[in-house]
Image (cartoon, rainbow, N blue to C red):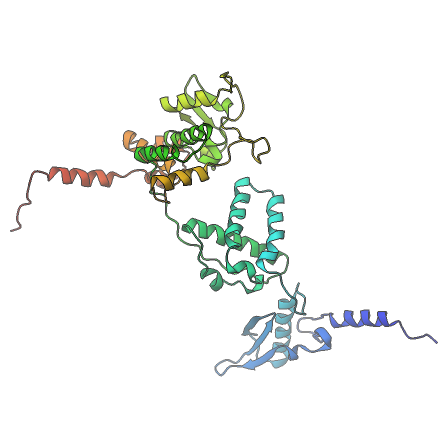
Length: 396
């Protein structure tokens, strides 16, 4: 006679039976759920007054499911409801469990950002987005509690671009949580409208910035670098991070006075830019070493520290913000506004939108049209023609 099975075996077998699900569409099978309970213990079947179909109503981990079974037969409607319940539980642990907060999940997300095959700019974008999210109440909320309504109430500092950076990062984090079966579905995030830059880093702004930079107490090298970057942005119209900071000596043609951009934001960004006299003088000086010998290759603006993360200049944002504040200029003025000023100036002086698109690396004509302001010239001419007291003829 066999003895009783060990207690451990009994408990394992019981657990397996408790978590076993079985179902079959429209066949003589029983829908069994955890703890041996039937689906009727979890699902409510009912009829509406003006409907001949049975309706189901149940909740799984706080998420309510309600709808029509499209069946008038109670037995068949029950099977449909059981299938709906099984589908809702598919891939999830039927027993409730504590989910991580967004802050706890951020470690796993940032590790994915580091290891993913994404452009460095994309990784930096997600890191900036999490930096904004970490300062809000969202970081302390469980990921299943974050809904569209909750996200819409959060106010982020800065412009709409900052808010959208945070919201896109939040959406990506919740998508990763959905992939790991931590949340059922990622809520939709409504982004804020963004408007194109209208602020220009014009000649007057340049003078005020450089004068303020001289009063900030920087070293001679820092002040010279700051001046060179500001002037180059205005005279070349390059994108600062992707093009200007990563400019290499090999791509400068001193004979034709042109700069080749091998890599940019778009395929159209791969282009050649002409050098003005001021740009030519600045780059000539920047392409010499400490002894005054001309360098033949390497970064035009190499990193100033040996242990820097990037081999080239990373940013002058802090210096720019300090000089801007000291000069009393608006916060909307950023270094990138030099590119907008470049496009506006060459459009006004040449009137050739095709040339503007080519030299700035634009694909869409609408983008280039932002630099054209003919309506202002028309209004100005009308006002000037009215000077001297010319009165309009009275109406009959």
